[in-house]
Image (cartoon, rainbow, N blue to C red; front, side):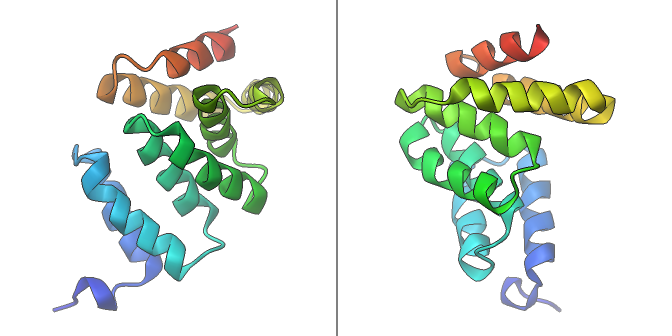
Length: 143
């Protein structure tokens, strides 16, 4: 039998993602994704997940460095830019528009990306219905 310590980083990531999809709380999932980032510091997707989990907890200040790191590692990931825009909105930071515009451009070229982004937004609003910043981002991206 394989224990968590014997799983590859990719397997740990997939297992964490399945737990998220099953409805596990951000507080319960955060340590696993932080550990994945520790083990693989250049894993942009894991940093994006850490940012998203912090944002779901209403902790934009903690999400900001993870979102910035995710964008720095993989500047082509539209969800990372959404997370960074949300963290900036939540902390009163500047530069939100450039991230929203970049996501809009990518969505214009890819219906699949558009669908993924809006599925993630809807998921976020289901898990945190009072999330004003996410509602704003959804409106901007819908224009």
